Structures are given as structure tokens and as C-alpha cells.
Length: 279
Ligand SMILES: [Fe+2]
Image (cartoon, rainbow, N blue to C red; front, side, top):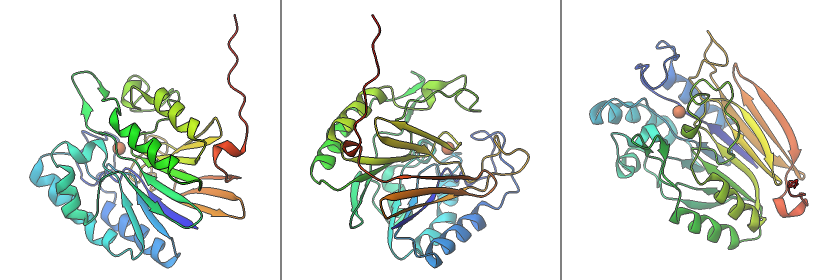
């Protein structure tokens, strides 16, 4: 079972969202090549983790999204797109659904032995408070979806819920509240209690990270068009998640490569000792 992954495409030459972005990097061509590779490589599912555009205004954002849509629509099997915070500043979820011809609601994709859960809590950033809004009622849906089926699940979100340190991150080092939801710990605790999740995939932070928390492997996948970890080259990143024979590999291709091979199992299959409290 193989999932082809691309994150934080940020189509558009404006550098306000991504000040390090190379305006000459051929974003649309890179996306077309990614999709063609996913098709020829036999990927079962194409996962696009959100932030497809650099937001400018409704007209520009619509045009930028429409430049990407034809390539994605060529993929013939399961296709999952998520909303990123930049996708919903000037466009609605309905606008994105019309352009990409897919649902942006939270949903479950049945992949046989595995389920992929595309979880879409509110991804609009609250600039007054300087944070995302709590996931609130969306968490109830997620826990229910996990409890409905015993198969190991992969969760996909735009924003990571790992709550990991952002030390050194170009965007979040001085603004860590931009990197996750304010209730990330409560979300993790509720998801961990189900014991059903094996992997949690996210984008948003524009770097590759892996964190094992309570037996759930949390990843963030590098942005296609980022440069802060690869300057002056563009990361040109995309990834493959492959699951076979009780193991998975997560391989990020391009100029910011990563390769990890780990056991594939839902978290309840490996007892995790709770952190000690010293008195
Ligand atoms: Fe992004």
C-alpha cells in the first residue's frame, strides 16, 4: 500500500507568506511531475496536505488554485486534499471543493487493511489571538471515527498535533502558537486512548520531523517550495509512505531527503510507559 504525499505547495510568486521562496521555482510543473510519478508508481492514494497557494485576494487565489487542479484531477485512484490556513483566507471550503472536485470535509478513506482519516478542524488562523482556534466539536467526530473500526488508522491534518518544540523553525521559532492547535494535548490524549492510530501526517511547518508519542508516529513533511532548510536551493519535496509486511517507510524525495523505516502498528499494540511525575 502506497500513499504519495505533497505538502505546502504555495503556488504564487508573492513572498509575503513565504519570504524565502524562489519566485522562479516552477511550482505547477513540479506538481504535474509529482502526480505523473504517483500514477506511474501505482500509488493507492494521493495525499495533498494543504496550503496550495500563497493568498493574495479572491481572484488571484482562485486563479492559482485553478492552475493546480488539472494535474491533481488526472490521478485515477483515491485523492485526498486538505485545507491549509492559506487556502481559506480569501476562498471558502466550497470554493476549493468546486475547483478541485472533491470534498474538504473530514472523512474516512478505506484502504483495505488500513484506514486514512482526513481530519479537517477549523484551519483559519485567528490573527487577533495569534493562534488557531480550538478543534472543539471536530475532536468528537475524530474519536468516533477511530472507535468505529479496529483497523490501524493514519490521520492526516494540515497542522501537526504533535506539539513539538519549534526551535530553529523559520516560521515558528518565535511564534510557536502558529505551529499547532491550542488544545493539541487534549486532542492527542483523546486519540491515544482509542489505541487505533499508527501514523499522523501533517504539513504546515515546512520541515521534515518525526516524533513518536505514545506509540503514534507524528510526521511533518517538508513543503514543495520551501528553502529555509536547503537555501539557496528549493526543497522540491514530496514523499512516499509505503506499508508492507508489518513495517512502513516514509521517504521524502528532493533536496531535503528523509528515509525512515519503522514498525507499522496501531498504538495499542505497543505498551508505552507514561512519563514519570517527580514529587
Ligand atoms: Fe504552508
